[in-house]
Length: 226
Image (tube, rainbow, N blue to C red; front, side, top):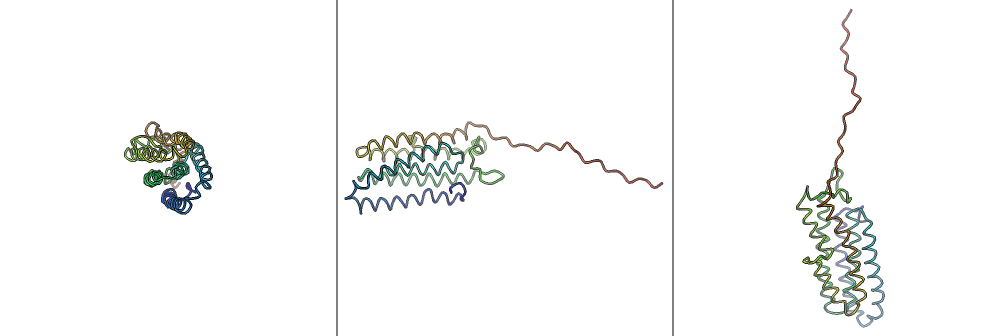
């Protein structure tokens, strides 16, 4: 769905709808069902682990930038559920901050995808991003910062958000935090793969049309009257 839809729609689905959904989940679980937390926590554990595993592992096999960002959003949904399971004020505040940083990074990343184009339109295949830094250094630099934030590299807003979420959930769900760290390390690979392609790979060569070997026969002059 992400690959075939317009990029503006995919950016909305990956960020805005997720922010609204998690806002509603936080409200319902912490206000309406806080007294029955031991009933719904095991289900949230399973959903969080499945989301992180699918988003991190399946994302490694993708060759389309929009599909990579799509599976990235699935993994981030699992990371957000880790903060939700924390069941504390720190968990709520860290989850909301994570939602803010993730939503901004996702919208900005999809916005940059619309700027990378070739003769056929949007260039979303990974091979089309090879050597992009030589052609568009500003776009490549900003995209690198956004990808580093999604991967949780230190000194980025994404790192602060993940650190806050994992710290809030450590005392309540330490095994889940360990799984989240492993999934985050796996997901960082496909972010770094895009960065390596942009800065260290060669630009794809465009094939030039070779001149035709069969030349048209020369025009014959009309024969003189006898």
